[in-house]
Amino acid sequence: MKKITMLSLAMLLVAATAFAQDSKMSIGLGLGVGLPMGDFSKDTKGNAAMGFGGGLTFGYMVNSNIEVGLGVGYQTFGENKSVPGDNKTTNIPILLNGRYIFAGDKLKPYVGVGLGMTNQTFDTGSNDGSAMVFTWGLGVGALYGMSEKMDLDFGLSYNNVNSDGAKYDFGGGIGKVESTINTPYLGIKVGINYKL
Image 1 (cartoon, helix red, strand yellow):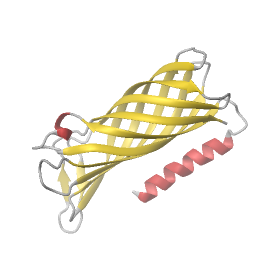
Image 2 (cartoon, helix red, strand yellow):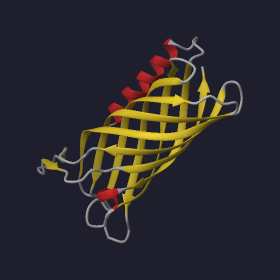
Image 3 (cartoon, rainbow, N blue to C red):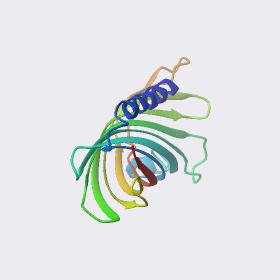
């Protein structure tokens, strides 16, 4: 998992460095919460509590409204304490992102989409298993101009980490265990975008 995170961060850094002279480029940093949905939140299934995390994005403005980019994140979800246990779910998504930014003065609303893979780990307290799973998301938000180079980024997104049927390698004699639920969540974030 650490290798994947470091590789993703290295890719973002190389891309940002290669195009640093292009004013169409931006880098973003955000923090947020994740609210488990569907089976992921049910006591008898995923039993996940609210999650916390953050992310790093790299964007390129194709034109005055369309931005494409790459993002890497980290989210961790504890367990709902209504059912005893120490289970934890950790997501490291790596997504290709696109968003349409509507024209505006200081406030610019946007809609977005993301597509990629998530390295997801289930930790039971005594063992953990991980798998790479397909992930997609849809979002809305707004950019608020703080200066010529910097925007505040407020966003709300639906994220579907498609874990149903994925095989998680627990090792240690346990082997691979197949998941029977998806792990979608509603993400709420606040971040800063800086134009390079």
